[in-house]
Length: 167
Image (cartoon, rainbow, N blue to C red; front, side):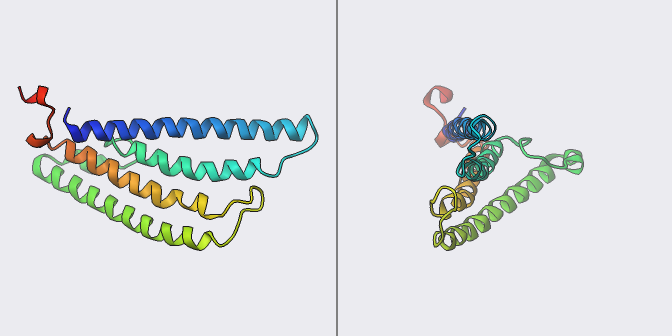
């Protein structure tokens, strides 16, 4: 496994661990909300909002983790699987370019949204709305980065191989 592939794998693994932590915080928050509402008869005003903010982060980070593998995201591959050789490689290259282009658009407009949203605060937590909105550009950047690292790593550049692999 070359350096770029290892980097993509480690980055995807780190994102997976972060997603697990987010999921645990969401579980605790929602469990506390249910306990406070039905046992204590005193519902919280922040836990539902926290769960909504975290689901946005989980979605964007999870997308970055899934992009490493070709079959991680939902896709219609019937025609793609019928292709062979260089045509399949070219279509895959165009698909990846379109994905990176879309990540660029998501990142650009996500930053604009986060800057605009930073002018207001959330009603439950009182944090700037830019916090949940920054999930969009951060997730788009990570999607593009993991995609680039994994695809470039699969090209087997000689300069990026581990010394043990070249011997």
